[in-house]
Image (cartoon, rainbow, N blue to C red; front, side):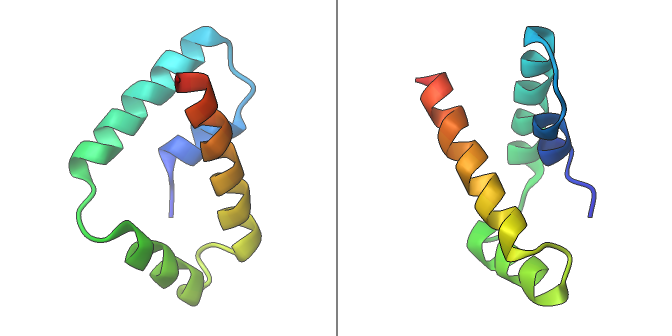
Length: 69
């Protein structure tokens, strides 16, 4: 599964890249349907993602929240 938010966060980008990341997040948030926890569990069960990837994404999200405050 191609996740543009995750891909953008993994790149070493300047501040302009942060604006792009925010725009991609807004697009994702507007189009996502369903329960996020259920979707993550489905992706984990199917092997699309690993527990390490989930942990890394959670860590990155925590850091991102600190930045946005």
